[in-house]
Image (cartoon, rainbow, N blue to C red; front, top):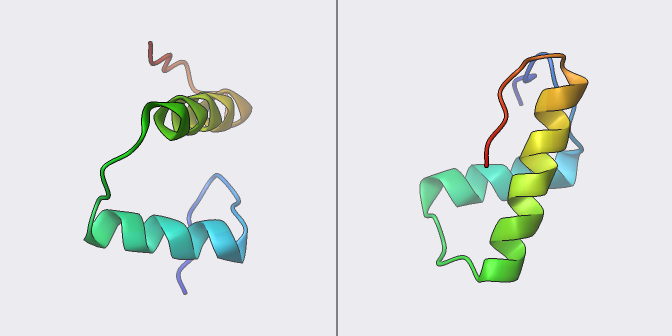
Length: 53
């Protein structure tokens, strides 16, 4: 498995992301919000200024 820099994710997340990229499921709104918040947090941790609203 390749490393994704600069953010670190767990094995489980990487697996889920891989599946998601291959065949994106229809997200329910709650999950979408959760994912958006997660991505925001990741982006902030890596120090980039990329705010998604």
